[in-house]
Image (cartoon, rainbow, N blue to C red; front, side, top):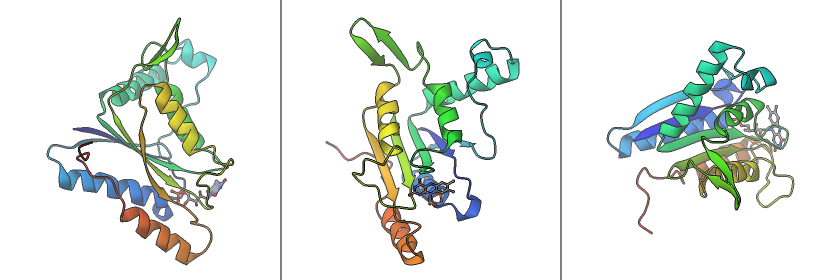
Length: 192
Ligand SMILES: Cc1cc2nc3c(=O)[nH]c(=O)nc-3n(C[C@H](O)[C@H](O)[C@H](O)COP(=O)(O)O)c2cc1C
């Protein structure tokens, strides 16, 4: 299985999402044979913003990197994405990655009947860490955004590992991390 692991937190060793994505990946490696992990740290190595020059492929190194990002995404069977909530949405570094994979003709296309996703058949596990509590809140522009983006590319189900209320108190943080660690997804999907 090819597993693409993305982290975007700016909080380094203090990051909740980094701790939890690492735990998901470790669980997959413990439970399944032949887990081939590709890792991208979008904070340490951010992708450039998508600009007019990107579309025109003015910078050869940027175009090569963008194609590598696309191929990693297309090849992945499983994505494990650290998606902290920053300013009510996802980190801009993660958005920069999405701008490289949501590409017409590669991961979606428009038809007379509307948009069709082309990147189905992958598992997407999103680690959602947030200072407040936003389950079912209209102020959540993080999880619904990811749900919409992946659905647009043909991936209709996202599995969330959620740690909320991190900023409320040290106890909230500890409890939220423990609850998330107790509910990690398995490498093998349960039969429907
Ligand atoms: C730049 C920044 C912006 C944040 N914005 C929000 C926010 O809008 N809402 C919220 O509930 N928490 C917010 N937080 C708190 C984070 O969601 C929380 O610390 C979470 O643990 C971040 O995940 P991480 O530890 O993996 O970085 C913000 C934190 C940072 C560093």
